[in-house]
Image: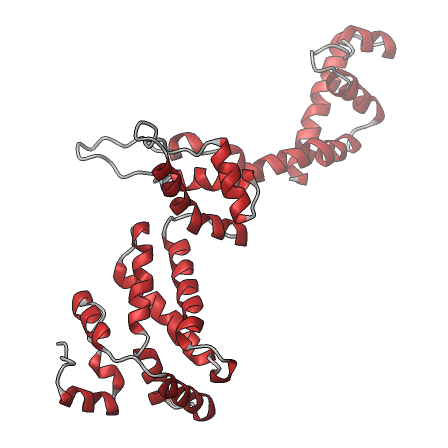
Length: 312
């Protein structure tokens, strides 16, 4: 239940508990109405409460400073409604920034709290938008952040300057890209990249089945790369080891003649299958029959398989 702020009795409540005059943020209209009725502090009051907070850590003084600037958060948050995020969440994040500003405010710096707090309020709102606008963060560097929060408004300004028959264009021209890059002090390629990011959207990798029970076709069906699947990568690495160190170990288990027969028959072969010695060529070299060379080869291969199994 919200409390009204119009009667003198409510002002008395504010003296003992300043937070009690602000209704819960869940009731957004009542919250904004109550915030806009809260009185602003004079320069003298602001300085007194700020020094009290700095010197004594008074929570009541902090409450006075925060309450008197809640309307600033509401006004600032309205500038970011175009990003499609809940207004209440924007206000909530802005309030966090306001409290950080109040905590760090130095009354002896010669500036009003409203000017100092604006930076902190916008910083918290910006961070919230960047984290929640898309599943994938669209801006990480300082230049990308500057582009993210200025490119949309600048594009609208370009559209307003165009004739009605050209205002439907969404993409920036090369001339407009150069203007944006020059005004924001970034590279034209960064402008093009950010424009592409802003034009895109989140897509489910594995969409839910349709109402008729049919499986929806999503990017997971054509973006998967089995080469980088963990099990496949382990198997590939194991095959590479067996093909090098494993084969070398298995060859060392053979006698010299068997090792040369296997090497000439299976290892000294070109990619097109040529280059290896035939059974008859090896038989002529060793003075035995081709069948005997085949038998030696079979026995050697069997012995190598056993050695490879032990190695693996």
